[in-house]
Image (cartoon, rainbow, N blue to C red; front, side, top):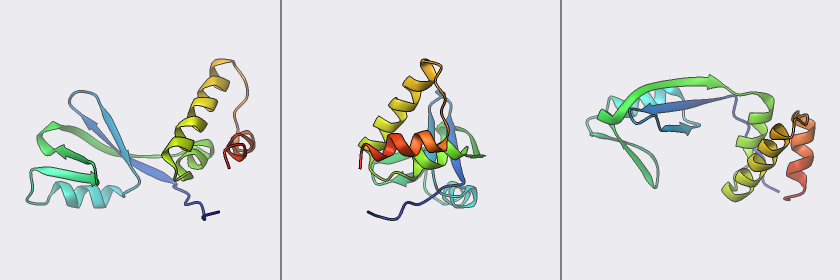
Length: 108
């Protein structure tokens, strides 16, 4: 199994159409991209955001549960895990890091 990369905080980009993009890049890295000469910010291989569409860039600390979710590299597994967490919250069940680790173990 690959070593899991834990993120302590994520950087969020809020656009004028209220769409939010999240990236593990630091606020300083996103700021450097924003201040570059290009009209676009390239976050991943398949996402470019036009600078004029950006409303706000901010960072936020992650909860222990979110740290586990974002440490999963496989996007499909991460989405399934988040769906399980959302279902537990909807059903008023407890969600803590131990429970999320158990939910994650069924996908590995």
